[in-house]
Length: 136
Ligand SMILES: C[C@@H](O)CC(=O)SCCNC(=O)CCNC(=O)[C@H](O)C(C)(C)COP(=O)(O)OP(=O)(O)OC[C@H]1O[C@@H](n2cnc3c(N)ncnc32)[C@H](O)[C@@H]1OP(=O)(O)O
Image (cartoon, rainbow, N blue to C red; front, top):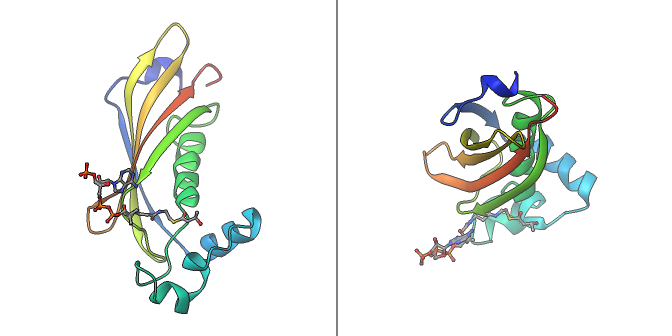
């Protein structure tokens, strides 16, 4: 995709299953072995009632969309903010939505809405990213 192909309002959606192996691998890679992600018994007795995905793993799925699909290879992260509004459970099929909300044609940058929805349709992660698209 070229910078000139992208328009404000363009939207991309992707479904992603949060696999147990993703959570286990993420915990091993980063060292975040918080029992709410890994320990069934602990998580069952927590406020969430079951194991949930790391918030940053969820942002990783967004990163993968930005870097590989929309806008795609050449996209460079400048910033990403996020509010984790609802927990996402292991095995859930989430919907990732990326939308171009602003373009800066001089700097070839874009502001993106980056949201994740639960299977129930509830907003789980509300976020915004700024990306450089100079290298598309
Ligand atoms: C460090 C790692 O190992 C751990 C993780 O990664 S945990 C995984 C990522 N986090 C989550 O999955 C958490 C998902 N979010 C929630 O379950 C809930 O939002 C919460 C338990 C964090 C907070 O719930 P609660 O205390 O019940 O708050 P309310 O829903 O009653 O809302 C009250 C007001 O706070 C606002 N708010 C709620 N959550 C957030 C948030 N994440 N960020 C910013 N603001 C939040 C909410 O909008 C309400 O605002 P209002 O103005 O009063 O309406």
